[in-house]
Amino acid sequence: MGSVEATNKDANGSPAEKNPTVVFVLGGPGSGKGTQCANIVDNFKFTHLSAGDLLRAEIKSGSENGTMIQNMIKEGKIVPSEVTIKLLQKAMKESGNDKFLIDGFPRNEENRAAFEKVTGIEPAFVLYFDCPEEEMERRLLSRNQGREDDNIETIRKRFKVFLESSLPVINYYDAKGKVRKINAARSVEEVFETVKGIFGSKNEKVISVSIACSVVSHFVIT
Ligand SMILES: Nc1ncnc2c1ncn2[C@@H]1O[C@H](COP(=O)(O)OP(=O)(O)OP(=O)(O)O)[C@@H](O)[C@H]1O
Ligand SMILES: Nc1ccn([C@H]2C[C@H](O)[C@@H](COP(=O)(O)O)O2)c(=O)n1
Ligand SMILES: [Mg+2]
Image (tube, rainbow, N blue to C red; front, side, top):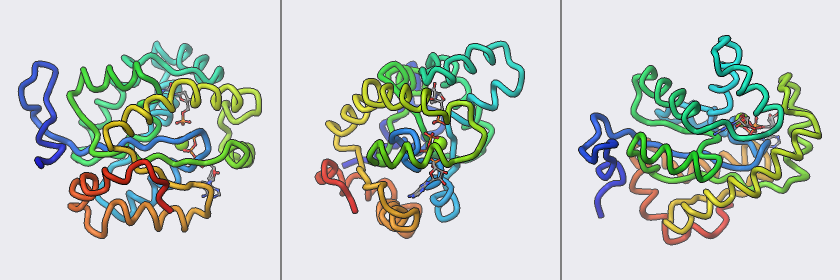
């Protein structure tokens, strides 16, 4: 079986200049995506790109899309793919790296299909942090990072969008054997132990681990 990287193509179907390794990091709001990505970066040679962080930076930069993005985030809605993908592509280019944790993206089918069409990139695999809503709600309400969307009204809207729009994307990748579902309702350390097992002790193991694990993707890894 060839590596996932070798199948990446650009929009014209010719081999992309670079064949980056992309891991999508998904899970409900407050499931611990950002926390675990920071741990992965500390231990493996990945660059962490959070779609939400890039959108918040775009608001702060005073860009012409800022007000639209801010309104959508306040409502817990998903910003049009065109905007988010441009930010991701720019950040990928600027990083100088070729291994990326893309956190909080794709959030819906539009995100997923547009990213694939525009970049030609297929994820090596998808980390899915599975966590009950009550636990995610507790975490978000005590996060204290001054996020405008960490209030109970917006949190409920974000949960609804996760169930209706993001879970179908996870199911799409699960059907392709690409989802590594992790029980995220444990301590940060316990969750990271499981994450480490998936990435392997050496960065180079990521792709082969991804293929070897595909047969058990529908089980929760603890
Ligand atoms: N395993 C854990 N146990 C307890 N608290 C956690 C755990 N993981 C993360 N947290 C805390 O929960 C809050 C949310 O975590 P984090 O920001 O990583 O979630 P997220 O999935 O990135 O959320 P969002 O989608 O809203 O960006 C933070 O305050 C973080 O410190
Ligand atoms: N692909 C994405 C990712 C995020 N957003 C917006 C909407 C989210 O509620 C918000 C916060 O994201 P988070 O930091 O929780 O990952 O950002 C989006 O529109 N599209
Ligand atoms: Mg986050």
